[in-house]
Image (cartoon, rainbow, N blue to C red; front, side, top):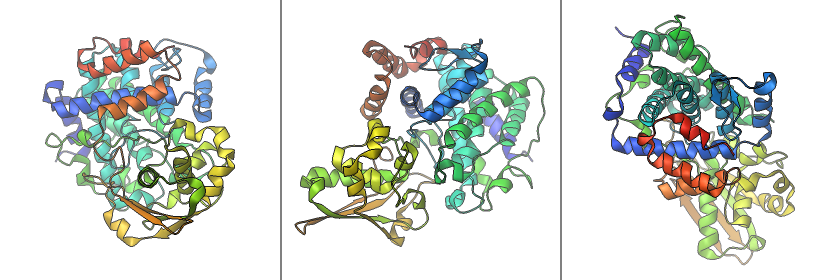
Length: 459
């Protein structure tokens, strides 16, 4: 009987561009545009700059480009830096609560540049990576086990699988080599949940980047003949048993070739924890519909599911961007004051804004078990990320807004994605270059050389 790893390998090796539904192709093209924007937007976070500096300590070398900077390093280090940068603003698209964009597209651009593949090969590799990572995340994170079991984070443990699947498809490994590459990457997964968002630093940026590095290195090692177990996914003491007690191995290969999970990708249109997004939408809807002014608010009540959203319920004042991105009250207050949440919301000087903190302290959290029943984000689509928000005014009026599918989780238009991309890219590139990147991504299947797209990101 074939192992789950071998089944995935066969799927990857048999996947070709002409087998991918047009709906999925269009989704992948949007994701590439979204990812390039995320990388350009994340260039100046403190974590990203530190990682980039460490990688550049020995100077430039041939291989692949650090996007937005233009310097070349080894292909594995380029994948590391670009992936970490992509995660820098916590702005990544996801599925089954794992950052499928972060660990596939920066890898595809780095390896694709080195191997000089075309746009169709790029799209195919990204699809293989997303389909693999998504299913591994579903197997690992059955019914939210990542938040309750052994303390690991879905993006950390599933990320190397997406990275190696993407890289292996571009390098064109055969079936046996692909199995070895998947095994090598799967044995090196990491990602303590504390380092993702519960600590005082945002180390998730690093372990996402290291997942990309692992995937690229595993690919080239397998090509050179390094071996690994063929049953790493389901073996006793293997991948799933190490990371979760509630895992389901059958989910790792669920409906391969039949159902493309890629078409269900959830974008992030706000640069902060996904679970704050319904409350942002609710706050903005109330603000717009009732002409709410922050100074007239007496109390804000956020109804939250027990356990699932515990990471966002912060009582202490944020002192750095990561704290604010995972601080439900602070983020809702900023949304009500600014009329939106953008990358500028979490600039360092905003953390000292007394108006935001004063309003944030009016947020009360109420656990609501009914919300937990409405939550559906770690397994099958259609996804729901619910949150209910009530705002009581000083004049006694009270407004309640219930959200099941916040923006990004609900159907997302190209215009939404372009607007997000443009705001980030214009901080780095001139307007004509921004438009050229968007045009290239919209016609990605016609691209002759991935390197041509990469060059457009250099100022």
